[in-house]
Amino acid sequence: MCANENKRLLKVESLGKDFEVTSRFASYTKKVLDDITFDVKLGETFGICGEGGSGKTGLLIGIYYLDPPSCGRVFFDSENLRDLKGRKLIEIRKKMQMVFQDPYTSLHPRFTAEYNVKEAFVINGSVSKRQIRERVKELLNLVGINLKFMNFTPNQFSGGQRQRISIARALAMNPKLILFDSPTSLLDVSIKAQVLNLIKDLQKKLNLTYVITENDLGILKQISDKIAVIYEGKFIEVASRDLLYSQPRHPYTIA
Image 1 (cartoon, rainbow, N blue to C red):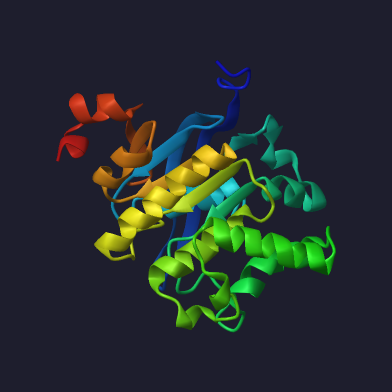
Image 2 (cartoon, rainbow, N blue to C red; image 1 turned 90 degrees about the vertical axis):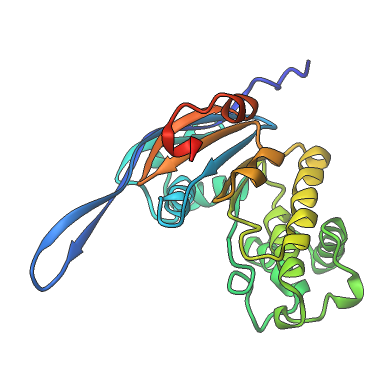
């Protein structure tokens, strides 16, 4: 057993998110996430399943602190993200990257595949131009993009290829944790399997930890160690993958 096998990398504690809704007739507070608590160990995949509008994307955005939660705490590598500001939060985010649902909009449409991946290095300014180019080639190779297409723009790639480029970009800063927001939901069935296999292979090669959302329990069964079912912003059931499928408890999960 590895020394770090049981190390907790991510802990989400009583996370909640409220939005103020104002109309001509009334103003009220809408709770979109309520008392979300879970943890993820190093090298583990935590799956979150729910319908559209259940709060999956909002949860990932809250964990990543793109839009900070209204209450609760997120600990990453023992750091409380609520206590971090500015440069310190940016440094943490290098180790916790996010792959968004829609590969058609998450990549810059005017940038080539090379520059979409290269941008992470340019922003952080940590290595030379030559080193950047070599690293970008390495990352594109790693996700299965032929280097003869590295000067193509996103509209010249298929949806699956775009998602591969998004994954390469997420890997640029050598993260420990990747948050996947329904990464296969907009892909054709045959391409879904290829992207899922890539995600699993990268986890083994790079010792990555994942939090992945999907609206399909079948997909999460293939990749997750633990699965949470979310409904109207709440976790209604959390269990190991095998237990969730063999002995689901909540009627919503069963349905």
